Amino acid sequence: MPKLFTGPDGAPRCSWSGAAPEFLDYHDREWGFPVLDDARLFEKLCLETFQSGLSWRTILAKRQNFRAGFADFDYAKIAEFGDADHARLMADSGIVRNRAKIYATINNAGRMIELVRAEGSLAAFVWSFEPTREELAEPQSASTSATSVAISKELKKRGWKFLGPTTTFAFMQAMGLINDHARGCIVRTSVEQARAEFERPGRPARSLSPPA
Image 1 (cartoon, rainbow, N blue to C red):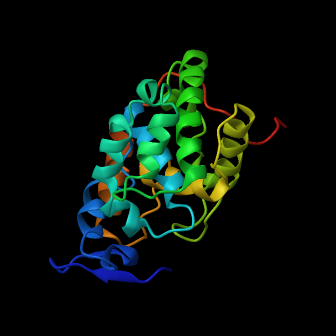
Image 2 (image 1 turned 180 degrees about the vertical axis):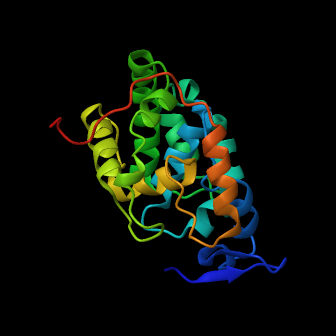
């Protein structure tokens, strides 16, 4: 069982939330709570892409700069970015200046338009992969899963870049497709309640295993 962090209010939380001061509010108010809005889902996918190989603290500290640089993650606007925008972003010290990740984000904005056209919304697509309780590992015991592999594979097939199973799993944790708060964490119950009250997009769930 993962160790817990005792917060300033004396309540137990996921241990990672005590690693940096800015993590506490993110952990308590955002991480793991279910998300329906496509702009925020796309933002989370993009930020997880930029986080690959780096610390989440770096990304969280720069999040407002990313929003400013990438048109508040309006994918229709990002899809229109050209060479001048790429040069502007590469010169922006407020974000992570990684050429491949910037190109991937612009590419993925275009693929997002195609996905929304085909599936109705990114939310409908992602939530159709929601795993059953029987498919879930013990909280915070894995960095990939059958679901993250399936989502990554499907996105790659559709032309998305820089979204492997580990990055996709981090996205699943962040946007609430699973409740990965540690057992004993005070926020786990709040997330579970939010998930119980959350109205999933109207789309049939996908099966990750063949029918018997």
